[in-house]
Length: 93
Image (cartoon, rainbow, N blue to C red; front, side, top):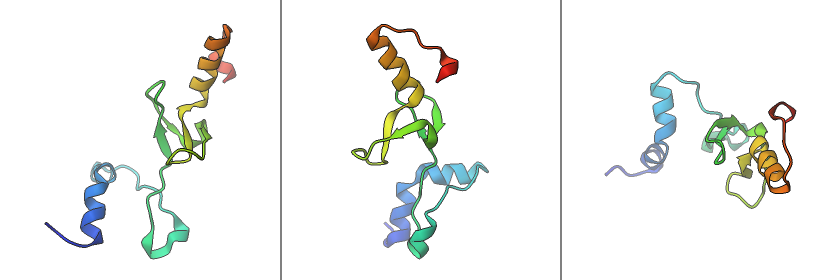
């Protein structure tokens, strides 16, 4: 088994490696971190609609690891409307 930080990082980021091998865009890196740059996600999977969306479409939630809610804004609005018995137009979200 390989030792050192490089081996550990490679094993912990199989999704990034697969994206790069498939010719996808390089992941964003935190520019302020310098030599110890870390991966900064720009997209997230919504647990409600199961669609990968931009982080802009998620509200911030400091109690989570990534700092964003697990549901996109559209799903939050849809669930709130269902709870209150209202109808929501998808275009207004």
